[in-house]
Every structure is written in structure tokens, then in C-alpha cells.
Image (cartoon, rainbow, N blue to C red; front, side, top):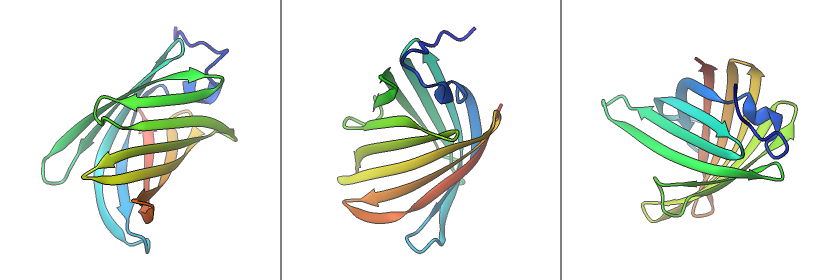
Length: 149
């Protein structure tokens, strides 16, 4: 049985608990293919505490694992990461099986802002679409269609 504090955690977040997999596709500012890689994303909620591990596999054989944690307060998820010193994010239920996610971090001396919409299609199928901004300038769109294992 999942131990989630339903007084503080919106129900939509509980439907994302588990491991999701898919191909992450990035486009440039004109919508042209830029790059792609495979990802596995594992989410867990215990009480009001949130944990996430992202695992990426690249075509050149490289991989990357990122760790995130957070807590829910009045229905809003606030996150941080041990993988990025200045990472901060918030996520909330926007209705109609959709979560809105906003994150900021510094990478290679650039300030990066991500605005993401996560749509739960079925209990084992979701789609995410992310607008990226680098130093305040639009940097393209990424999207991923995922299945839950």
C-alpha cells in the first residue's frame, strides 16, 4: 500500500508513481529535430516527501543519472536536486489529468528555465512537452511519450 498524505498531495501525482520510459526528443527554436535520447524516470511519494531518479542513455553509449527530491505543501510540490546546486522546481495539478512543472538551474554558466506540461493519457501512458529558455531566450521544445512499466 502506498503511504501518501492525501491532505497535501493532489491525487494526480499518485498516478505518476512508478517507472516511466520513453525517447526524449529535442527540437530547435524552429521545431527542427536537434537530438534524442532514451530515458527512464522513477517517481515515489512517501507521506508528503517526493523522490525522483532520471536515467538517460545516449546514442554514443554514455549515460547520466540525476536525483531530485521535494515536499508537498498545500498541493504544490517544491523540489531540489543533489545533481545541481541551484536547481529549484515547483509542480502543481492544473486539472484535466495535467501537471504543470517549472524548473530553473544553472548549466555551463547559463541560466536554464523549463516550463513543462505533463499529460496523463491512461494509467500507463503519458506525454510531456517542455519549453526551454537559456538566459531568457527561447531555446526550443522537448517532448517525450512515455509508458509506465
